[in-house]
Length: 466
Ligand code: FAD
Ligand code: 2HG
Ligand code: ZN
Image (cartoon, rainbow, N blue to C red):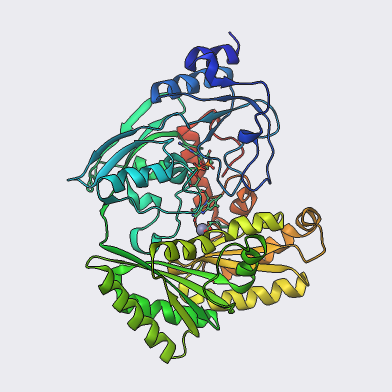
């Protein structure tokens, strides 16, 4: 039996796509990787996922698991060989159970993040993972990349929001680890092995997630600042005054916001341009008036101390959405501006200003006119330190000629400043070479042993991560 026939037997002919335009599954969100799939397979439950894995294993076919295909590092698309099978989990989209007393919910891996947030909200609970792609990324993809997003400083990243997993192994077995336990020391933590493994160790088919009580009020403010040092001072002040109430602290450079203004002129920018803008979010357990009073006093103190030059507190939910929309439109504005180089890096927060000063200088000396797009989750030390080609230079040419040298400058500086070359997007195809060069040999060897033990034939997402 051919592989296509076996796949049709596993999930039904209607769920095996092998003819026609498959580009939606073959091209990544950033349009940097264009592969060719033997087929796109859409199982409807974990047993069907297991059957697909067994069929692929029997034919030696590579399996590229895909959720929402919003990943930033080319991990979710097949290579150009035309031999790999894309395993789309979009049909695994059931909310399986919500245990309000245990503050957990169990969901299929193909559930779109926003639908998970909404299901929690319907029970007056909060699932705090939040990112601009939440309307299309999936829980499985979030866990496979250990996604971060905008609430990490308070609630942690996807790993910290997950208590249990169900996984289909490379042998086509289903491991049921869907525990809602907050304590479980029964040997090696298999859950944490699969989280962040980018589809290279197993296929996540379901997860048990942590929920939180909903805050009484959530409030947003924007502040304009002269320097990144001032942004750090504001962060410290906000942490002191708001404590655990500080749930978002995002930074945006002037050029990043100018791209939003250029490509989305309809989006209101509440404050005039400034070298840096910070978006603060506060979640309050008491009331909106309590939150507002805290915010106003914090921002007044910051103004008096000369830390910020201007500020606006959102007066309504609409204004709050507008502020978030501004921030979340930066990646889209970058995409509109053209192909670009991204660096999703993390650094000790205290070293971010010196990193940016030194690296801006080094890049502009080597690539005069390069346009630096700087923004990110400053509250947890994660910068999106990106570049657009100089004005008038074709983006594809700039990337072809300069990306390697740009990356060398940036990643050398990251290492010098005690940082990581991937904060939240993962390694995928994009940073595989960089990981091989920069991760300690002992760590790489351990990672390879784990890969060999769990996927001896190397069928799960070949050519990604390792
Ligand atoms: P995909 O892109 O489909 O896959 C990503 C990786 O996970 C691939 O390697 C894939 O093989 C693997 N995978 C997917 N599903 C599974 C599964 N069920 N089992 C095993 N492996 C699987 N990321 C952040 O961390 N923080 C952000 O703030 C953020 N903002 C973003 C904003 C925009 C506009 C966009 C487009 C992306 C953003 N991302 C962000 C990146 C991306 O959304 C996240 O990485 C997301 O978690 C990917 O989910 P997905 O379902 O789209 O996964
Ligand atoms: C974000 O924080 C995403 O908006 C995307 O992680 C970052 O486009 C980027 O570089
Ligand atoms: Zn981000």
